[in-house]
Image (cartoon, rainbow, N blue to C red; front, top):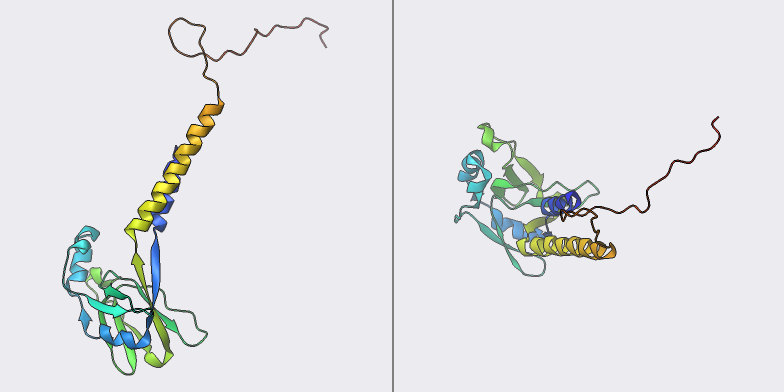
Length: 188
């Protein structure tokens, strides 16, 4: 049972997300994005972050599919050079001009002190990556793992014969066969 709980917990923590490539010209649509309430909501608790608001922008991925960008959307910038990509971050403020991308991360903004802004020259950016959480895929994966574990337990339980008790109280007692006997023989 602990194994089943551990697998479920790992699955929920990993969750199913999909990463989409956003072309560099689409970053201009994020210019002027600002969510002043995100820091306050972060301070009040993550439950409040799910409150609907109109603080969002829409960007298109390389296939033309629209995605909503909010302060809760992880975004990373893929660099042109061999440098490592920036890690995924959530931003409460984004500014994009002809020369640079400037984003104020959500992390660190709840302490009252301003979080240091991430400033990246656009000449170094190849494209952006946007990550979306998929509740449907996560539930499907968790349900499948649960069904497989439960089915395995049922299959294994059918391999064992039920025990019968020798007591008349209805509780099962495992019958180990004839009573062991002490063998008499030479003592050393």
